[in-house]
Length: 267
Image 1 (cartoon, rainbow, N blue to C red):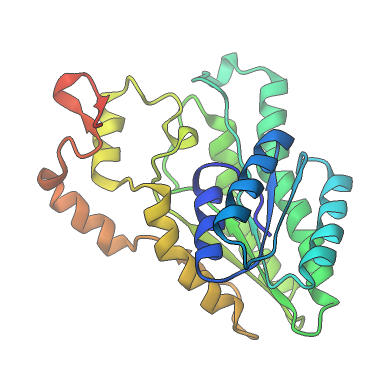
Image 2 (image 1 turned 90 degrees about the vertical axis):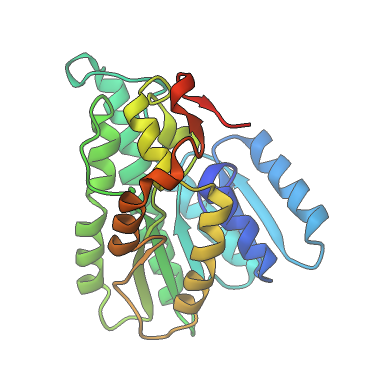
């Protein structure tokens, strides 16, 4: 089960799992998007079981229903990836952000993750083989000016992981974080298109979602096959790899965006 699987990193993870022979249940916010992804993947991967459901993970009743149908259609759930996340559509200073905007982001990113984790835990606890839950965290713990709610929702991931490891101890349910790093997605690029300093960072550290997924999915699958492993963080790049990219940043000038030309994307 992958939430937020109709775009960006979630979509790339779903595709890579299918490439490696897994059956996948796809979630998205919009029915049209879910239907389109399921249709395209069903054509490309006819031997796999592919199902989907649209709805808001900020609604606990919907999440419980989705878990019930996913288990019914897949037979069992070995891995549940909470990837659904949103932010403001444009930069918004903290003092100018509306309460409804705070609530929307926190409900989707934080409460949606908690609802998904709780639902998956209850399902997996009832399965003979158990299962593993993976929560997608932010690229780092850096400040997120003008996107305060998004940063706050993602900064809680390490604490949630530590708490759940303790609470789920002795069960057949493992819980982990996924750190995909900086991805070239609309979500992570939101508000940065005119910020040349931010685009320089993307040139150095960012990767396409498909590249990230090819590295993460084998690690996710190995972890999901383990009966006792829990509490790990699966990272696309280690701290030493990040440091190496910074040291060799001159090799990556204008890799994705032409800084000298106002940050235009490389075609």
